Length: 292
Image: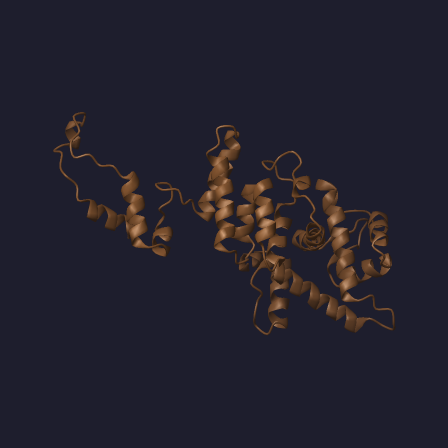
């Protein structure tokens, strides 16, 4: 998460949340952005003059609806006209001009020119993820976000990762994602900052292995699944025996994996001169060196 600090705006986010949290940062980007938005909306509440404060929850929901609607328009969804924004905000039952004013005052929205946009793409994706969370809770199908297959990005990938980081239990969402976009499911596990259960990781691994070993999947899909397995780990014997895996697993298992795919013959009638003299290797030393 600290890598976000290379961007000036996100560095400001980190600094403000760090200060507001008395020297503590949230565990992932989703919670960081939530804390940032809460801090700014609380600041606006204190500044609000008179009655009629719409409430932080109402403002947050209105911005979530706006962000989701913007993102649903595709590549053109990073900037919309004020009229378009006002129409969509009016649909959620808020006073549109108040939401635009407060969003701009809180430095969440930039409405200084001819267009309305969120100050940073991650801010838009965070609010879009809030709305997506509500929609998924009522059994919305994930396939609608990748209608032409998951190989081509649709712009919802980072939003899905942020949504995963919001969830108290990621198992339902990640399991559903694994059947629709298994590579993104792996990214949700690896990049969300969530703490998945072992069975959740295993279900994503199984989905990726099914794609990587399929004779009917196109090569790009199999290649992408293999790359994703490299992130989560591939537990098939003889495929994954990385140093990190060996250190976190029991030595007996690693020795068993190594012995299952290392086959050294003591005699070989087809050996070249520079491969002789033939000798009997010490497998214990090979196993020990591999584990270290």
